[in-house]
Image 1 (tube, helix red, strand yellow):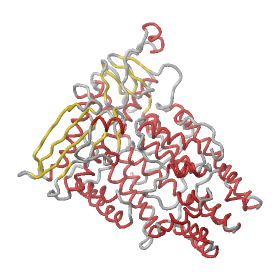
Image 2: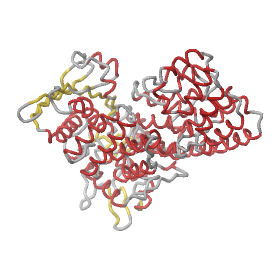
Image 3: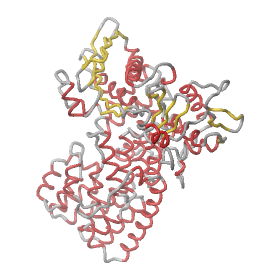
Image 4: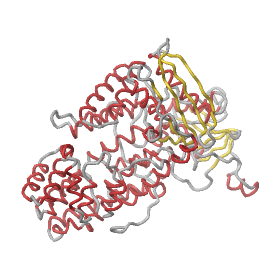
Length: 612
């Protein structure tokens, strides 16, 4: 599995996530399947199915009575990933368990030895016809459960209390987010409330959630006394409160137990058919779990020294449990960050891709991996395939804002600016407080006021200052940059040159840009920003060279090339015309890929206008 490859699918219209012609719901036995809402219901009770199991069931039902070969099923389920046949067998087993089926007495899924499977149960009349004859739909399917996990109130006497306070709740939230039944708000959002005096009704109103998970950890003879509560937010009603005395080595069980209680209370139907994943998004080894939590805490402040320590802790986690996919994904992010920003000690950029390949081999549907891997692909010039991959995942994970956050990034890199804005809107519908990179999209559209509104100044280094400069507010931009002298190392070419332009030091600005041009460590989007600044200095050849590097590196927007006033000095040059033609060709190819991946259905777009 180390040679995992990502492939672009030319025609995904037959994928189960796409909207098919005809009925969107199917009734068989006691089950009601709604393909549009991605829900399976038995006798009015929703069944929690892993995303790929749901896709598999859709494929089988749409080919009702026909044999589907194993190779065809695997291509449909994992169109851009190579997986082993055992993955399909495991999905079939999970699906049969959910349906109460078995190979020996198969009422629904029949095995054709060495060939494939068929769905054999009789289907009711199309739901459209049933609805006309009998009135309203048979089942009113509930929306995703909106939930937030608050930081645990933790005694300072406990070792690593910071990790227990923030990162254990975040790990539980991340596990819940892997289930389609939930839309999960971030723990960081919960931190905005008073950790002792918060009011559930106020939380419900401010965060738009249905349920709150809260807890406290304190010392006891066994080690840790844990008290966890599930609260109905709007009414403030206590759904349940549980307490345990545990040892440090039982933190894994505490995570698993809380996860299962939440799912059992809010999602699961009775019996085994609705069981949540046994692993619940945690490693199997107690020491691995402790290393994972500590690494996650370090990554909340993404500085080279923190990310290097986190990398080592993720490696330690994986030495104890090499099959823990989330740690591989987070390790990949560390490798990617260090390859970009730890200049004093170069890192092999291939390490990040290898870590993500391992994560996908273990769990091809891991939302965390799909989200974090996007930046790696985009920086490597593969944003188009990242966009297609995310579009193919989104129908089966409609409640995962992280996928749409990643689509904001990938679509922008491919020049699909309307789609990038639509992805931002969808992410914010799912989580009104989620942060995306849409500020960069607005910048490409010339919407500099909106850039300032959406830019995260808490971690920002550059874009807000640049937007101020583009609005003619040079004095404000210069003052803002002055407060960030300690961050210039993050983007030295862009920041030093912008600072020099604002100070009227043309020579220093051009020198910084020439040094950056020769540095292979810059991602293509940063090269675009530096090309603008070179053009503003009137350095046409340097600007065209940087712009060409940006487009060849996989970042392009013909709209911006046509409308950005800072590029005016380039538009009369033959080289710029060649660059524009290259960008137009690449963007057209990406547009075709977007349409083939049902992008218009997933991200309906509105046309943009310059400076809108």
